[in-house]
Length: 311
Image (tube, rainbow, N blue to C red; front, side, top):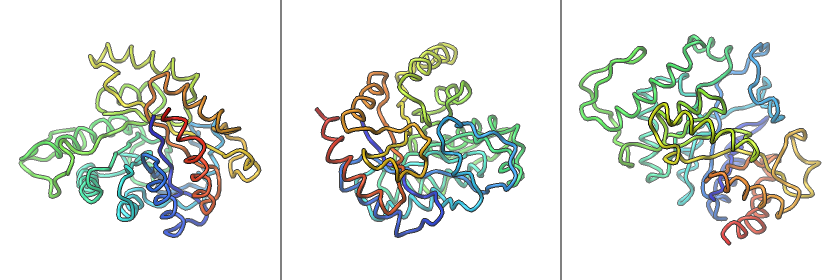
């Protein structure tokens, strides 16, 4: 199993001095990857229901929270790391022009020397879609088509596409990806449409706050959808993002109501093992501490948890 680390690109007061030590610690300590989240605007009045109510993380949607752009964040981290993969968890794909995303992702793939993973999702916040001039009802079709545009631009020369939202003919992307076929695309979404999108169009599936006991249902849905779309679910990389708090640090957590990996190193290893038994290959940990305290927590995970996973 590979363990990734969520970067603190979301918070009340985050910047370079808080991000870089986390990325560099993950790179030095043997973690597999670092990840950045994505939102653009936060409404003061919101009627859209947060889809991860059970996670206790809705506080991140509060106006005043700072969300550093994930692609900018990862580009900076690429410059100060040598080994870890760098991914978006997740980029809300319909918010952006897919031709621009294809070029931006290709550039990150180049400057990171092939370490970039593009995690994408369809989004959920209607107020955010409207602020960007996008009909929220189109989020699913736009996400599907945008992924197809990315693939076309990464693999065709010249490239042509005739879709509902994007059309071009006889062009070539100005940045050729380093990775053949372009960076891997991991599709987020815990519901049926997200799972279907992952199987139809993705290289991996990236779940958020999906617990080990939820995975049999996820796998059953993937098997059923796989028969419909004629793709073996075993071809997908399965990944989840989860909160983590080192033992004895619970009172310092900024999301105390969140169910997290914790209790003891043994308990964390046991829960990660339950994921592995269900075919999950990557777990991205979101350390539930203020950013300056995260490197120290990663030291503990690297010393107490990672060695047990390699046995």
